Length: 413
Image (cartoon, rainbow, N blue to C red; front, side, top):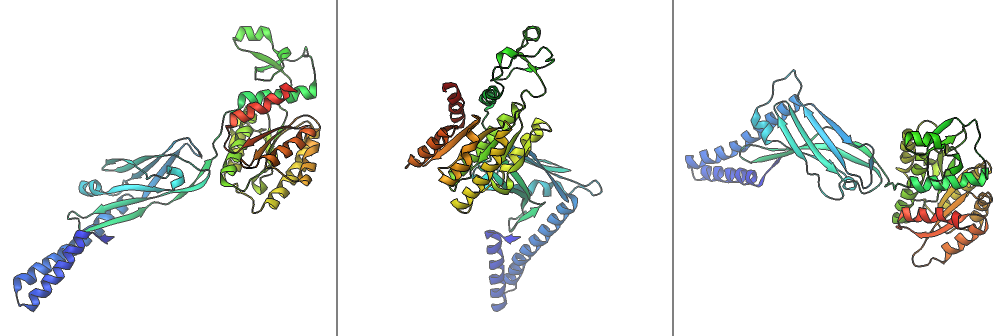
């Protein structure tokens, strides 16, 4: 609680006039000075009673955030409901009408702007709703609510924190790559099974996905349903994938790379294939996600990206990448598809990555320095000779376009 400029002037004038009245032995001036000083004191008492009454009547604030977690570039809303307890009488309408409630939120959640809330008042509740426009991945705080009120004469004002703050997770921006992801996984499937012919005992049917073998289409059922259906056995459509994420040092490249890895991983999950994330340090998942349902796996994968940060040094990043490459090499022997998002790297790391390309199911996105792309091109050339499908890109390139170019590489071979 603090004095407004009017309150400061009133108190100062009251003290000065009272002191002059005493010095000049003028009772009227003394009375005026005392009255002005008492007005400030009465305003303080009024504020204490009003705030105390409000806090007793409305002891809790319920915050609802939709959607949750948030996603970069996807607007969200926050609703804060401050409801009265039934055991107490409602405070006077004047108290409610003079209270101005707003809530604090991290600038990463508001796009750098302030929160502008729509407030609904009633005798038993105070509800405010405002929009969020998350612009950065991570964990950011929302709250607490602030109540701004002033006495009827505008001598005192108060900004009182109400309720508690809470942390909100923001997922990276995700680009829909399901169509081309299905094509890539279908290409990888054909590399393994070759020209497998459909079996007569294939009884299970599912919707057609890009990349499925056209010879497995069940034409009779497709005609009845009016949509393309394919035969599916217990192994079809379940080839696992590994996304290797080499975290760069620069902030822009970091966020772009995480967004690309998340987009690839989520899209592969949406095509029905398990996926795992490697190379991002302790936060990465060594286990394949997608065994317990698509929505749960999707959330688990995106949760893994929320707290990712750049390695302290490039050497530390290379150590993570080598460890991920060795783990992915073991999976590639068992038929996994591998997609790597990496910086130009050393010969030692390339030696660990090379065995993954031998099976023909490895794709690499090599980030290039816009001022000196030669290192990236050299890395891509080494990977291509080892059997990878490698593409040189710049951080900030359209993720969907990069992904389409990768898928097209197999078709050109």
